[in-house]
Image 1: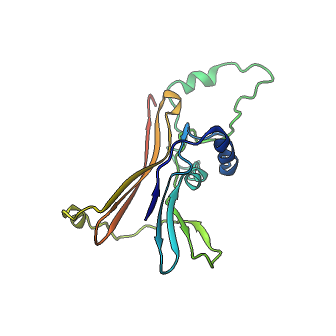
Image 2: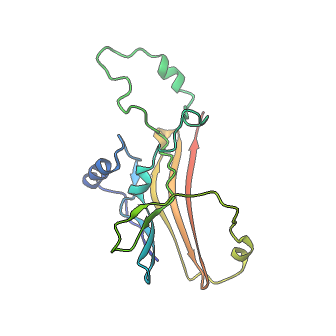
Image 3: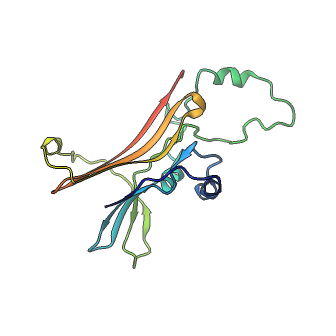
Length: 185
């Protein structure tokens, strides 16, 4: 287990990060050098969580058939009624998920002698987390909480992606959480 909590990116790193992300803009606070990596030494298999891969998945879940795919705040209706001066771009960001909602589930990296490295793809399963085992008073030998990015949505709410790890002698638990609050929807 390897974790790193760092400060937000400086402007130079943020510019590079934005180019690498493919998004027209980034969250206000990107902790681009923060990460959690689980490394199985015997197989050299790595499973990690990092801001760049998470941000690359922003908006990838959007669909015209999904009813919540376009969150609009109360003031958006007023904005859409305004007159746009001639020659001014109406939507410089194009079709963009301004809430930074991501379907990121972690990054899988195969052994170094393999070229297969990809984002983890989740599947529905009937298996459940053994909550009773988690309730046992096992000693926690390691804990960390890593924020990957945060944005205050221009004072219209909060978007926050974090990952927590709790290691006990016999097992570990990783919890990635995307928290989204949009005010005045």
